[in-house]
Image (cartoon, rainbow, N blue to C red; front, top):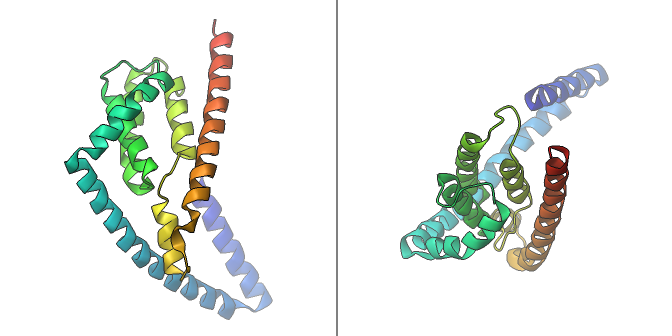
Length: 196
């Protein structure tokens, strides 16, 4: 669906540009956008490679295992329907650990695997389970300690202090996660009441 929307926007802009005689502006914007996209990607790649390396060091040193161990009791409270020791728990913990470190790109494969494992536990395959909804809420809001992608973008555009957003990001992502969990619990409560 999103592809259709993007295609529609592109086609409409080209038609409007042709009708108004501004095709050269569309050409210039397309090439400038492509140039900016490549420039930003190279900046993001370097920072992402650095943090992926840090993540690998954290994994080898046992820091990720420690973080997962610390998060484990919280995860059990958030996902009461998932049996302890189920593979979904490992993927959920890895996903949350990567999100805490601001590595959304590294967290995505773990989130997808967690959803795949949660789907195996889901009695109604046509609708998401409460655990799947909770994971989606947490993953979308996600507390972030180090917003690596935003730091990279700020560095790319010459920010004097690209890490000054760490404090505000931590506060806002914490608040977003709390609100997401409260809404998730409210919907879960409504769902349970309706089916009992």
